[in-house]
Length: 317
Image (cartoon, rainbow, N blue to C red):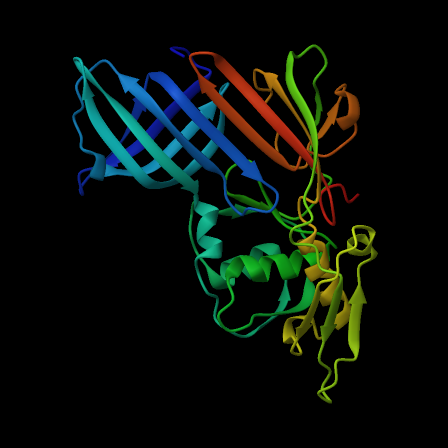
């Protein structure tokens, strides 16, 4: 793939100065993102015909551009640089900076009168992470001990918007489901289509303790019953959901249904779909929202798989 379809670049530092190094030839790559994962992922192997003037440990940030669009900016999780002829190959694995939302614990407290932006900024300051602006202000988000910032973001999104947060573009935390584009797949060459079912995590009956130590809050999911599944859970009183304990139980149930029913297709090429885009002209997936995207490329060409989840959050309007 010696063209501009997929370009990998990286920030390299010697401890004093930084510079951008671009790898001109793609040997193979994989990029993916998912509604239920708070970061993008990228990995691949690229080649340069010129000798390397840096070492692997000097790489501090990785960029991936597909068809001219930056799809990934992330941490250099692993980098391997190997001589190859007169040049070198570089293999890497990288996760987007929003990963850090799931790896940092916020200060346990009540965050009062917050929107999405202020909730994140009160708990983490990383320039590579952005978020959707002008989201609703909620009266409070309770942050529990040993929880993560992403869990607080999820609680905010469910309270303010009624659905799960996700990463749009690269490293942008979003909660609105009406910001997606319409992507037509008319004329693309389909290479695979499928439907799938997963009931491994479905919960049927959830209970939460009241202040009098009885489990008076309950939520039952009939979806599990359709498959003859009985899975009960009992929870202590959760301060995060004091405003509506039953809504908290419903949120746990909705999350247990993640990826329950899946429609997917694979086609040759890449149209740069993003999460919450709506696809058209694609048979059984027409009118559905994109909930996962995976783009791969090698000597055979570039292929994109898009998935729509029919579950608690994927196709919510």
